[in-house]
Image (cartoon, rainbow, N blue to C red):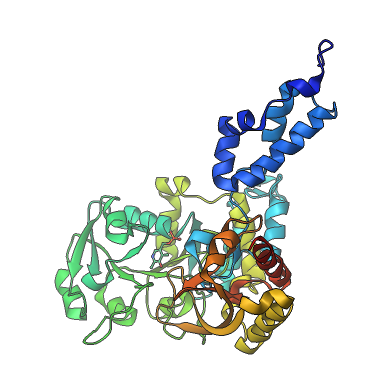
Length: 434
Ligand SMILES: *Cc1c(COP(=O)(O)O)cnc(C)c1O
């Protein structure tokens, strides 16, 4: 493209002109100006060496930016399921399955007959096998979608009977009652905030009843003079009972004794259980529906089901997670505090002289993501001055910690052990900038 005898070096666009380009300016806002500036400098140098026409410097710099998707961060917050950080990280088996499924797959085809087959049957069969108490299963886009499908198919224009103590907000303004009413179902509130009895439910039932809803208050606890009606009693009412257990435990976990699981809830008599795939199950974002054969079939055939269906990548990740349930979420939940302590000590020791400002401290990790409120997991953290928080968060490899009383705590419970070295390097980089 070179044209004429003008020395190209004299026509290389200036740095401030380039940084004012809307695409590069937008990248500066998310990646940081220094990072974008170094990309720009490299493109300018290529032009000065004659490898690039000066007119192409701008486009070359834009092309050299990292793709504008979510950035990979290290979760040292001690919150196992952090919604802002994408909740559950996938297991390596699930990641491999996603990569493999990215091309053409038999997601909706039976290879033995060459005919169309039930979409995602591998994942559905694995889910059914994991919870034999479920007569049938279905998977939609997320936990909220599972509730929307159930409410629309079973109660639009009719009533959902629900306790006043279970009309919860999950987070970021997502309120369950608003979601349910958006389907055209009416909420028939019963009981009080702290106490709802079987008689309260029974008195509200009538020809308008679509179902009784039981919601796990996943992110708060009511203590004191309280009473809730368990699924086992609701199941005697003679109407469908839909139980939103939230966190997606398929079977009971002794570490979280108060957390409901799908199998026990179905055994207690729930007609339908809804849950998320990316909470305690440790899988991809998905909404799980498990329960009565005829009811699940009705949901599956409802026109709305098509709008809520999951893609092949989710199905692949879910099948792999169910097949090999040793997920990073489970590893983080069950991590041994003694092991965490020695990892933090090793991290501090390997900071060398730079480790002077760092302390090894006990910490309390939590499940998060709408699960097991009130459960604290004994953990260990590297404690640093609070001013480390911002550079660690905005560095090339963002590391997210938790600020407690003027100190930044880097809790290693949710950091894979092989990433300890990355944490060390990130901390050292901040030391270097001091
Ligand atoms: C998390 C949660 C939801 C919403 O599930 P998503 O997968 O986030 O859509 C609904 N109900 C309860 C009880 C939850 O904990």
